[in-house]
Image 1 (cartoon, rainbow, N blue to C red):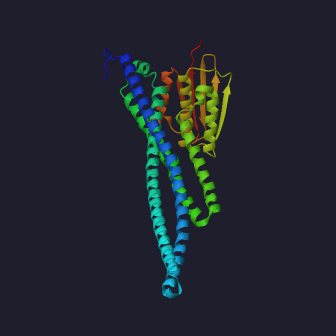
Image 2 (cartoon, rainbow, N blue to C red):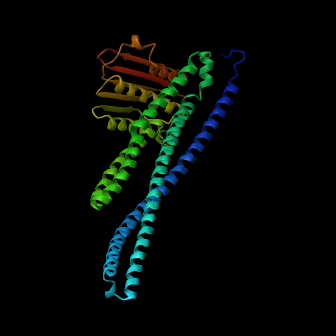
Image 3 (cartoon, rainbow, N blue to C red):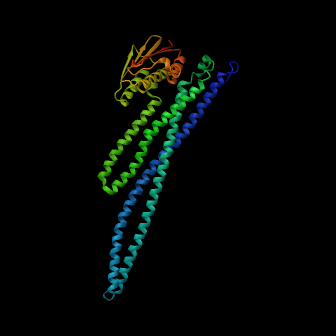
Length: 382
């Protein structure tokens, strides 16, 4: 622990900024690796498709050549049995023809084996590249979570530490939040896009086999079904990216971003209805205020659906001259505030956000009577 005499906020800021620079540099390096692997994956897929087509052609040529070889052998046997009925030239021609076909067949079978070996090697390398891409994307997403938390929630950590006299559990809470977010994101990626991409990889082999065994129509049907899986994976990735940090927050402001977020939540959670209202004229406020408001509403809505088992949620913002009031209410099962007051990390996290903004939070809840959370955040009047 630092004592009040030795605690240096400037040194803490320097350490914090160096840490951010290091994380950003590492993220860029990982992203470059991911993009290079992705390009190699695409190039290798194209090469694999070419090899597969070559194998199909070689197999057809080999089958045709094998038939010709058999006919040439039969011709040679016939000539050999009736040697006296054929000229020396005809005998030699029959022998040379059979020999040429046999050599060509051997060459083309060797070529087929080489192509098959190349195909198997490409497929193994593709699986390795896909694993590298998944791991790189997973690490980038983890880094993004940490950066998002650091840049959006810890810029005022110096002031918070001064005001709170270096709360002993502050660092522990930060680490716990980061680890919990990493686990959550890891589960979402593993259970969602990663599984879907693995399924896509397996389905490509199935399509190739379907094309060879059942024809183009069946293969096209499999491709159409595969496109649905890819679209679902893309939708899931976009949802995860949106959860990390909505880009619209910086461009459009808090109200359009909340509307989009709540609409997305409703779309992904059938049976839950969210009612949104913004009173008076919306105003653009500093970025740290908008991020905090968004995270507060997000935490309340998540808790209402996850723990409250609600059917309806009401989100209301009221813009005053020098403050903004936020109310999040649900009709869920509620809880006893006295029981969870000192044990809920979510509530502690919301209180710390509010304290940084010099705001207030009021939580009202009863068993089977729902929950209401009221935030009042003062705004800087210019």
